[in-house]
Length: 76
Ligand SMILES: [Zn+2]
Image (cartoon, rainbow, N blue to C red; front, top):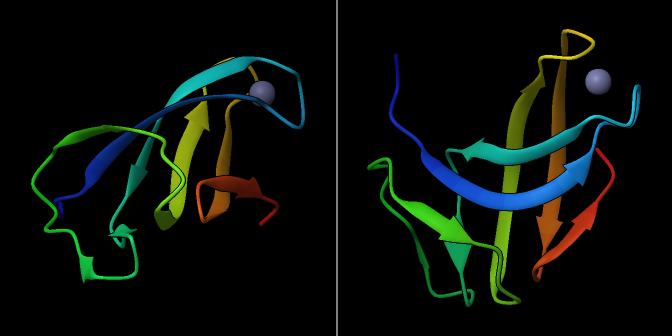
């Protein structure tokens, strides 16, 4: 299994509305400066972040992915 970082941000599952508050990312960039090493670090969402994030809804068994642009959640 590859390494990744964890982004802590609450998002409702688009399918069932279940709460998901932990996401994985392998391409986190902060403040346009550098890609962050994937070392299982936990981050709160902040407005300098760009990343593609992935999680899994236990409620409806669906894999989810979202894009973060400048700290805002965008659709896949
Ligand atoms: Zn769900």
